[in-house]
Structures are given as C-alpha cells and as structure tokens.
Length: 313
Length: 289
Image (cartoon, rainbow over all chains, first blue to last red; front, side, top):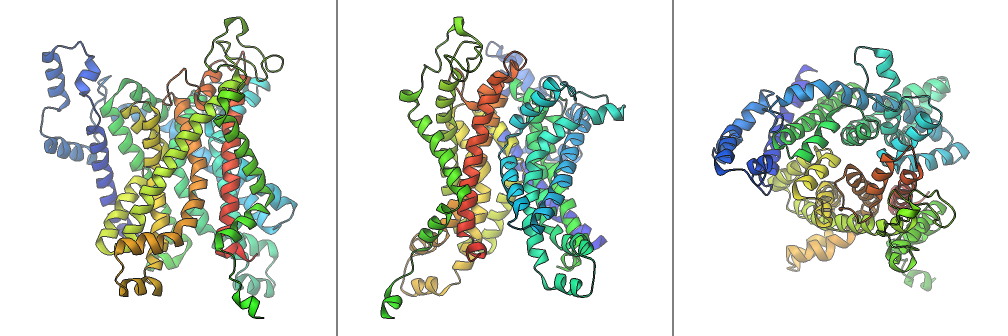
C-alpha cells in the first residue's frame, strides 16, 4: 500500500509542475502592463517603473518563472498586488468556509444520490425508476445560481426557515451548520442528480453479474446482496464521479457564495477579477488546481482500497 | 429471399434518429429547444416591446396584464428581454461547442492516430487543462480578455476542448488497427485522407452526441459568467445578467430573477433531454434493449 501511495504521489508531480507553468503563461499573455493597470493611465513613468521593480516584473521571464515555481512549491504565492497582504493569509482566512461548503454539498450529493440510484435500479423501468430518471434530469439542468435563488426565495424569504445571510461564526458549530444547509443543497443538487444516474447504471451492471446470482443461490438475504455485494462492486464508477465532481463543485462554489453572500474563495476571486489583481489570480488558480490534484490523488487511493486489483496494476 | 439479402440495412444514424424520435423524453426536449430557438431567432419580429427601451412610468410591473412577464426596474419588458437574451445564450454556446468540437476532435484524432510519445504528451497537456475547474478557467480567461461575445466563445471553447479530444481519441486508436485502415494504407492513401475520409465518419456520431450534451453545459457556463458580471455587456440582455439584476431586487420583485432562471433551466433541460436520447440511441450496449 505504501508503495502504491508513493507511486501516485510521484505521478502528481509533473501535473502540478505543468499546472504551475500554464498558470504562469496565462497570466503573462494578458494584454496590458499590470503596473499601469494598478496605477491607472495617469501614472508617471517613474512610479510605474518602481512598481514593476517591486512586483519583480523588471526581471527576465525565466527569472520570474523560476522564482514563481520555487516560491509556489514552498507554498508562497507572494502578496496581493492590490492590498499588499500575503495571498496565503487571505486565502487561509476564508478557505474553511469554502471547504465546509464543498464537503457539505458532496455529502448531500452522495447521501441523496446513492440510495435513490439503488432504489431506481431495483425498480428498473417501474414508476420509481422513471420518476427518479426524470427528476435527476431536471436536477442536472439547474445552474447553481438558479437553484440557489429558488431555494432562497422558498426557504429563507417565504417560509423563513433558514437565514438569508450565510456568513457564519466558525467557532459556533450549530450556527455554522444552520447557515450551511441551504447553500449546500443548492450546490449539491446537480451532484445528487448525477450520482443518482451513475449509481443506477452501475448497480444495474453489478446486479446482472454471476456472483450476485451465486450469492442469492447461497441464500444470502437480498438486502445484504444489494448493499454489500452489489454496492461494493458498483462503487468504483461512483467514486470516479464524486472525484470528478469535486472540481465542478469548487467552480460552482463561486456562484453559491455570491448568491448566499458567504465568505470564501469565490468572493476573493471575484474581487481579484474586478481589481485585476494578477498575483492574487495566479495564486488562486494554483490553489484551485492543487485542491483538485489532491482530490484526484484521494480518488486514486480509494480505488486501491475498494478494488484490490487496482493496486497491482 | 433474394430481396432480403439485397436490401441494405438503414444506416446507423437513421436507426438512431428513428429510435430517438420514438422516445417521449427526447421529443419533449426537442420541442422545448425548438420553442426557445424560434423565439430567439425571430425575436426582432415576435418580441412585443423593444428589449432595451426604458419606460419609467411602468417600472417593476408585476406579471400579467399589459406586460405578460412584468417589467424590470427600468420598465423594460421581461418577455422581450428574455427572447432577445436567448440569442446571446444560443450564439455563444453554439459557437463555443462548434469550436471545441473541431479543435478537440482534431487533436484527439491526430493524437490517437499518431500514438506513441506524441500521444502521451498531448494527453498530458489535456489532463492539465482538465485539472482546472472549468468555470474558474472560463472566469479568468474572460476577465483577462474582456467581457465580449467573441471572448466568451473562446473561454467556453477552451474549457471543452479536452473532453472532446478524449472522446475522439479512444475510438481512433481502436479504428486505426482495423483492416479498412490497413487496406487504405496499402492503396497508398495519405494519412490525412484516412483520418478525415475513413476514421472521421466512424467517430462522428459519438462526437456529435457529446456535442449536444456539452451544449447544455455551455449554456450553463455562459449564464453563470453573465451572472457573475462577465457576460456580454449591458444593455444587451442576457439571461444570466437578467437573473443577477433580478437577484438584486429580489425582495421587491422576485419574478425578475425567477423568469430568466426558468428560461436557463428550460434550455439546459431541453438540450440534456435531446442529448440523452441521442446517446441512448447510439450506444451499442443499449441498442438492443
């Protein structure tokens, strides 16, 4: 197992390096001089030159590139061009909110999607199956800001069950959870729909295998056959989808944070976009990609746990 | 007997189309898309009002009455704005997916056909593209290039190239081992002719089905970018932008956010229904069910 983990970790290194390179290139091909963008068109040449020196933009591209890679690998993304504060500190302050939201949405997606998917598979082509397929298709089509607004209108403005403002006190767990429910459902809706579909087809596949018939013939109770033998074998495609979806959740969390007025990476990225804060954008892109690489790694490791054949491959 | 042998089976796409048409979900999806497309294309003639004309006397009118879906904070007719906004959604997403389909498809086909280290390198690059959350990538590209229609197309296309490359690559790798490709080589056909004359027709249906499904994603991403404020600039109406404006007035006039939200939802749903039906109809595993 340790060998397997080490190999996966090593495989993630070139991807991370490539991501860093791509981020560097994207930010550099932007038209316009960042110094002039920050200072405005009226800036004196001296002020612009001084700012360029301070930002390290007067060095050669290669020097900038290696400095960027070196700092990034040490977890240092520099300071924001606009506020002058450390990017890691700014991100670190709100990261728990975004992680809360993403994880809660993921839990909602799995907790709804897996049982409904199994239920639909067991009633193939019956009323439940048709309903589950139709509802999951609708769920799949909701842009997250639309589901967010609809939920907000219904449960915060009309029935007033949940708060409209989503900024929670991180120390108060009850408050944190209460303000998390609505945004997590809005964000997790698409995932729940998608997991329902994947679970349904993976279960149908698994339940048609010979070992299921063998298990039934041996007299294993049906409930156990479904939840243990069936689900265990259907779990690989489900885990794959969950892993892939975390990236989409992270992206969509930006919209959720806007609708529910929650602090988080999304708020920072929108602020950085409006102020053309290039160093902040560069840092945020790397952090997003880093999170996704970590998720992919965890997904790969889970494969190894769920299916022993993967480890030796 | 001889008749049966002589009659060629209908081509795969005809069978698929016939099967898709007999599926009620697909038909309903196609109808939704058709209504939205017609009302967007013919908006200049069908829309009851000018979508950008302000009428302060009639601001924030509730739905029903003279303005079927109400008016916004400037007194502009919501229905007319929705019809015009559909043009932006459809133009951007069709343009982006067409571009991604061609660029990604060619990258995937060439990569799979050439194989070896070249293929490994190309797929590594595609993996890197895939490791960006697509909305974040789109967001940053539009923000850096500026919120204009062409840039939206570029940004959304960029996020969709890698998946199309993957979908085109896998069947190309299998097809290039087949006898008809070898026969073509033996006859002296060029690689370009084999790729585009012989392999492309065989993978086209798969790429097209994925295109329909990705169209739904593209509509959603365009709406999301407009909602964030990175869409085509006002006063041009966009569904995402209208939802955003409505969201800011949600306490006084909730319909302002609800109607454009429903429009986006319906178009995405319609496209998903059509794409699903086409996929089921072309999937060999499901074909005999």
